Image (cartoon, rainbow, N blue to C red; front, side):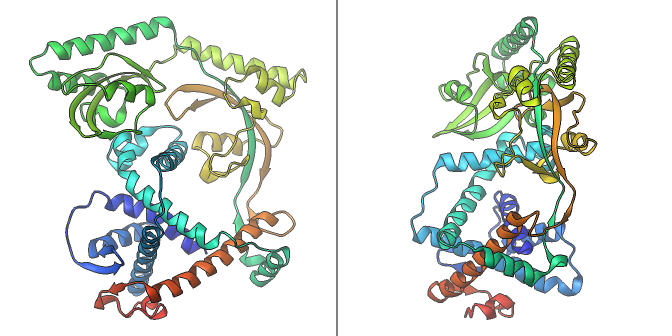
Length: 452
């Protein structure tokens, strides 16, 4: 069960890495119209072995296991084609946003860490994710179709727990439920005016230069606040609709080649864009971004504001939820100030769904405690401060039916669904044209699935 989950996560990253691969090499498997190249397997295996220790004597078996998963995903994609499943651009965009939000949360909102890891700008990362994410959504649709009617009874959950025994139950990580009161230091009109003056000057310098593109590139390297593109002279590569903020796309898709936009305000700050080339609905763009920064005095004022709110609560003049509704600047404060986990849509977070700063702060609190004001960077890079209130904390432990019935129920249901999918695969390979290279004929799954 755990291994299948890890392979599922691996699938996204292996395809993400393969997306830019253009080498034509040996085909080692065909599944209907889908193919797997030798290089696909080697890349996926490198991804796998970089995550998990593989003993030399197990190398062939582990490679077969990775190969099996690649064939499994291709079989799912083949079935999606047979079933004429349609995935909309809105679904793809929503899924990409979820993943990017997760990446940002894991880096404390610092996009530079993500860009350094992938060696690409955020826009390029989003673009390269589109096809792998789309494929993953196709696979999820097929799997949902197979398991849609599968349910589990309380007696089955109990039987599952008894069969595994206490020592083999899922390890439940430390979880936290918390709320926050958010304060964003305002940026002065003087600061915004200075930003606009600078961008207008950069625009005019570029337009007056004999080579506007070179001048724009140099200014982006020197002054842009976008860490992913600044080192590349502001270049974002080719951008398709849906990859930029709507207010930006409304302008840049009306530019002519070589034209530089006037100042555009977005959630990330203030930009000017230069269009280099248009290919249908794709634009090759560069930009210079300047993000407004609150003054040190405004930041101190925000901290003092949150300290005063904390004192109001501690003096019992107002409870946390009422204080959040009254004082927080979080648009989602109508939840009573409770922070919702965007991945589970619950109020519970574990160490994998919290940024390092928040996790470190919560670990030092006991339920009922309030933190000092801490820095919080939104997904758009906006600097804020927040006061945290820890509602509950659960220490790591083995799941049990009394405290963690839902956890065990989900595990039991997942096992039941996995068995249904395996049964589906066994039947599907009998009626699907599948060819495997002779080199891999002794892999366990080839024998188990009875593939010629």
